[in-house]
Image 1 (cartoon, chains in turn brown, blue):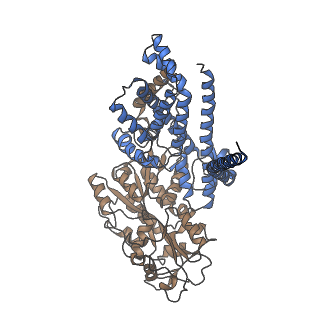
Image 2 (cartoon, helix red, strand yellow; image 1 turned 135 degrees about the vertical axis):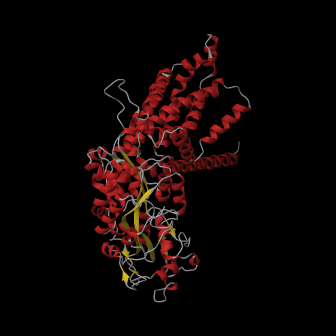
Image 3 (cartoon, rainbow over the protein chains, first blue to last red; image 1 turned 90 degrees about the vertical axis):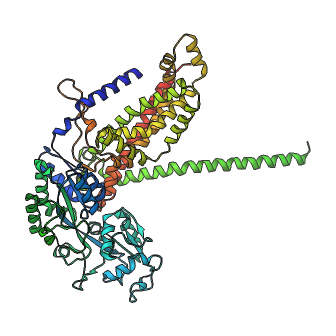
Length: 333
Length: 307
């Protein structure tokens, strides 16, 4: 029995080295990165493979925005999903490896503040009030609603939010507190947004935030809190229209794909990205994200065909930026 | 013996019996905590996922629409990874175990090796994932493939296989070896004809414990780069031209059941939670089938041993 097993193993190892490169011949588009962008890219990949009748293979992973960029800058992937712009350090890594990239916004993600449906007093919230609740100084001090706004009752304030590894957390803290990752630590954090949904729906004094899609799916258990736009002074409830028009600020942000410029020479990658930008609007809506305007998708497609490499951001996030302005900027590497 | 003493003795006996019963109950309770939790979880997943388990669920690729999403790429990936795991860990583990028991001289070197093998069984799986990322994926250039994943999980269960092999070899009476040597057999002949066949039932148990651990592992597989959305299968293991058998699938990108489940549980739509429950149910079922097959094999093997 043993002898046979050893022979089989030897055969397996031998055959492996003979045929290791066979798979490289089939067209393959490799994508990895943010789990926030994943549902959209998955939908596009699914439709693209259907449209190509299986002639092109697409794989999508969820290593997170940072993990995705690490692979991307080593040249392991063709496209990287990112829920925030590429950062200084990642730009340096890509440059060192000689990898140029095209930055393309593909949709919006609107961070939605949610409360328990039993909460009757909260009609709207300002960024300043959010800051009082979430800034590091609030830790163990701001524990009641009336400490934030005297008009609110003397009930316990329970906060829920994504964990510190999430791009959503980075953006929220940047937009609300003013500095990425600067937050109080004594809130219920979970990387799984469904846990946050459960938490807020069980506690009448709860307030939490997560991506818009999770709110849409749980409208029966939660209520969205309108956020006052600091520029117009009007309270805006998150919705497709409010995000597209730019009224829902500062909590909506564009999300991106980064395409390796060298991979664009491969026809399957070029076709995939074009397919992405042409069908992005419909598929984005289907997975409950907010699409860009048609003009923005066209503009992005134009930038892609001109191979404008680099990032429109200077290696850091920006709050409240318009996608149409982004696409007009001259990207830098 | 007077009446008083007799009563005192009876009292002691009743007290001891009471303790006996109490411990028995405690033991039963301890057992039930594990068994009942598993049963409840299993039943819960079965009830929640029942509506989704059908032929289509097994033959469809993942999809953005929960209703048409399936686990084809996941279960095929899991089985292929498990195959590589078994084919790498079993020969290596058994050989190492046999060497340590039958060949190795007893000195401080083997003592150190022994201690380390036992310690390796307690190393967190993510550490194996990081090791494999550096070694298999980059150094050996296997890439993010079924081969890398299988070898990683193989490494992970290697200590379990080695320990199980040694335990079952030790259970073989010394007279079997002495008999073989007395007839002029070499160590290799003794091992091949007696030691390995007689200990195979115990080895199999160890292999199954290891495989059951490996099949549910997520962390090291994510570390080496399993994918979440993959709507094609690895190349088939057979070809129409010579040599009719192909190992291309070893280098193919893949996903496995726990990763598919993990992805579904974090989706916003409630329908994906149902999918996750269904996938979880099937994963437990796969594990149980594997265990069942092993128990049957062990029974067969034990029947053949006549000392």
